[in-house]
Length: 219
Image 1 (cartoon, one colour):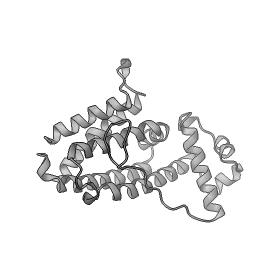
Image 2 (cartoon, rainbow, N blue to C red; image 1 turned 90 degrees about the vertical axis):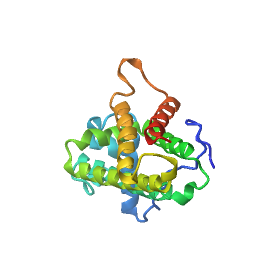
Image 3 (tube, helix red, strand yellow; image 1 turned 30 degrees about the vertical axis):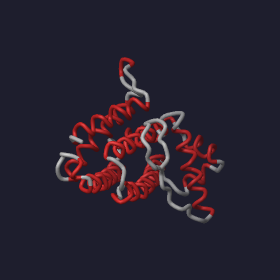
Image 4 (cartoon, rainbow, N blue to C red; image 1 turned 180 degrees about the vertical axis):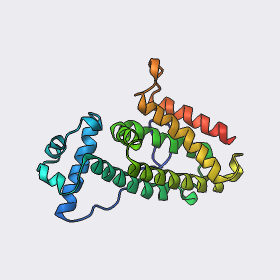
């Protein structure tokens, strides 16, 4: 197993990415999506222009408009790519057999640490999704679908570990754990930490969220 250095939990977790599709058109699309994600690490989505995106991607403005009618279409494509990778990753980590021999506290700590690290590493991308959700019903629908899939995967794990916790049936318990973890991470994202300077480091956030989840599970 690999050591997650930020959390201190020994788990083997990494993003699973879909195999790259072939073809010049697909490569141009990926270049635009990669450029958008890189720029979002530096500035907010509303501050990006099509010219910024195409310059960073090394393509013409016309290339953008052959694929997208607007920046919102680009953001949905970014989310679709993110959701596809998330589902591939989910299929791996939600398999109970993968974690045979791993204690529940270590498993929870590893998963939480993985999520905290990703929120910190891709803050700009996640902020763009969060800010657009309220104004874009299509994006909200995509996000809700991924949330349900994530809860279902977590529920499988909790059901398989029913003897190690007291939270009851997997799906309802998983829905609350999702609220607990992602609610805290989304709050941290929206405020760039916490108002008043009460920020937590990545390791602190992982430790405290892990403690909260395990406490609620009664594990």
